[in-house]
Image 1 (tube, one colour):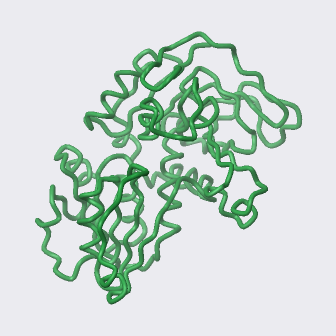
Image 2 (cartoon, rainbow, N blue to C red):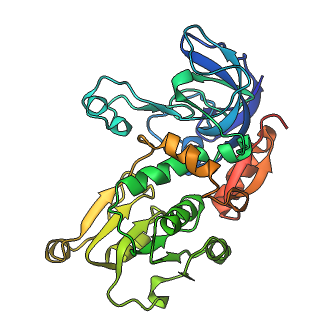
Length: 332
């Protein structure tokens, strides 16, 4: 089969590799669509420490089950599935207390083992979620990023009539926007330096958009401020705009060595809560249901569909910020 292989950071190519064979408890999925994520860019650049090389990337994907390993129950040939890429050990302290996304031996399909930028991929059957009949595999490949956004909302207080401020109108920011809208937000304001992305945010229901939060008129601040960029300037700006008693969430991925300035007095005096959110936790099945219900405007989210041979073009498009969700279609 054909697959994108990142041999070493900065060196990758589409290669012919052996077809996967399912081990006990595994299935083989024919990959119909796989999304490009910021993590894939970090892996290509050698900036994601857990990744071994060579590796086939790709962790946001959906397709059809074409082979079953021994002991598989609940998944059948020809099932259309989205796949949770999480590989938790199940035995460490964090797994035992139900926080597997913090697993001491964390792994993920496409991040630490070969993933879905290939025609086929072997995955644990337990990680497969059957798609509703009304949901295509193209849209199903959005389930994984949506499940990250669902977990992010699990980490937030949810009160009807809350005012949200989001930094970043890329894929994740737009998903967070849509979840806030259906979750009873009083308003959602979105900041991004990319004006084309702000147009998409308005299309998806943002009440106000701007290239700087200085353009908004909300002196008290916002009850919930969420950074979806990982940019230090955005983080520091957002921390200063949380209303007294409010919450700041770090959802975007900053470099591991980055630091941001905060006011400890303000955190104390204004009782500001700062919370993180990392990857997927008990949220994948709910994301499938939300996608099936049409909560996410999938067609608006997906802007590029490319073949495996166009992996480099996909990376460059992602870096340029000229699209929203960019997908590879291994069968084309």
